[in-house]
Length: 545
Image (cartoon, rainbow, N blue to C red; front, top):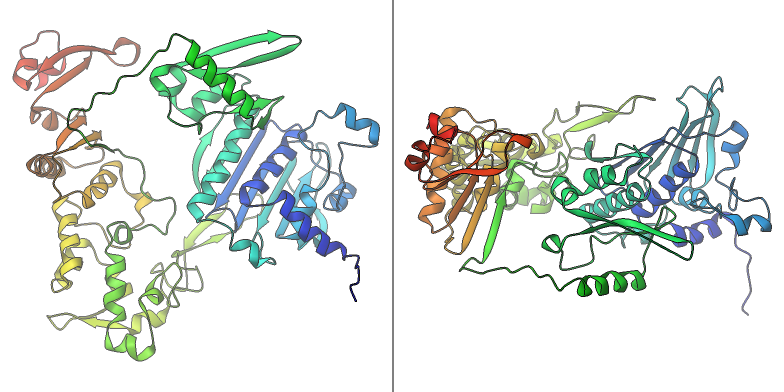
């Protein structure tokens, strides 16, 4: 016989969490809005991975009293509403009092908060919505909320999360929307210990657009304003030359809150069609693809290495999995992955480093004491591969070798050898296979990005290099010129933005911008072959080539 049950509070909270907390980005939206409502002028959002394992939001807002901190995580506990009359005058970002209760019910939370003028702050530790610890503690003014292991007690929700990269992008977009809507607040977003954006908080919309959209986009944005029947509209639109083929860069806000509106989207598109029908003409002259090779760091965290980026590590895992000892122990190729495999170091979870959580100070990363930075458990060292020269080396030991040494060991492994030879030809023979790609210099990153392009037919491709000689020794610049020649031999067109004189002298055609830098430049001073530019009296560059 059916029976109607009144659910326990913690079960109801876990169900309600689905309404508020769909993914890590939802947590960031709710916590940043709480900080904005607290009057914060500076907000820092930090995530690791995709945000499911670690989110921290720090602000310098009003903070909470101890008695408020103790009840802040109860359902429908809010400081923004007292009775039904207040519903008609809501001006805050939130008011229902459900967000913190929903977030805490599916995660582990640490709250540190202090009101201005109080002698001490309050620290609250919760798991699954239950307070585990609460005591007075020293902390700066404002509130710091740390959310760990999101959905740890609801594993079904974890299956609906996308990759770490996708979730991290959603987190960054959530923070970006809050920043665009509140130029008066300085918002910093940190992903895997790298600062992705920072807004000055000077109250100027132009500064906010510049920080979040970049200089090129900001300088060509057109300000628009309008007012009718007491409704005022302000914002920025791009000129037709910078238009996009989708709506990914359209942001609408109402009283500082990001909104989605098909009506507003249609209004903007209708206005564009009525403004003279300006068009951008793109001519296709046999060019199928343009590839920008810039100095942007490769990878977003320490898990990205030279070997993984060059597709060497996957091949090595397959080879080691076929070794007699690996078969004897039942190891598969996946077990040799330091991201998810059984042979990864349990102490650092395969990152090669551990983070020390220092109270009220930035975290400190140190080399993992268990694996000493190799990322692998000691069992992985027992599986060795013997090459044609009768040398026996384990995969962790091979990852510690530089490209030149690894090539000597892997001479009999066709696919691995070919990919290592490409790295050597690019002048990267000194890099170790296990070196983290985010730590590479700009020039090294550019050459590593080329590893998959060398040897292919490139007759329909244009490569654009942005200062590829950055950080390179003069001898390595000669190697770089050899890389350019290899691309040319395969039919590619190479465009280089450069100041290095050796690169300039070897160009087929030069466009000299100047005559000075910044406001003193910006026009074409000379164009032609190096010899023609050398003979142009207006070209300062010509005097030195």
